[in-house]
Length: 64
Image (cartoon, rainbow, N blue to C red):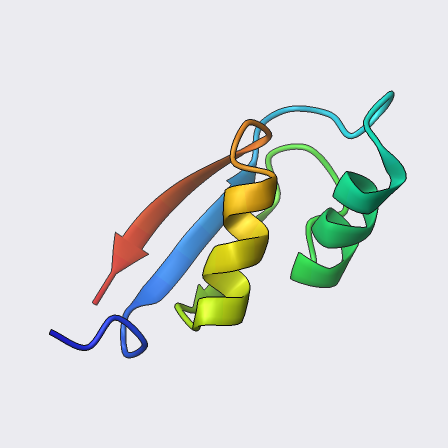
């Protein structure tokens, strides 16, 4: 199964206030600028790596 063709629905569920600068930069690069904002991105290895770094701040749902 090809995981790149899947889309990821990523929602910011915890604030970036008080988090390390790298976490805040990662959130910004994913397009997550405020709480409960949801973005839909392709499930590339780069995006999945960024999500792994901030997994404690977001919720992720895989879509076909």
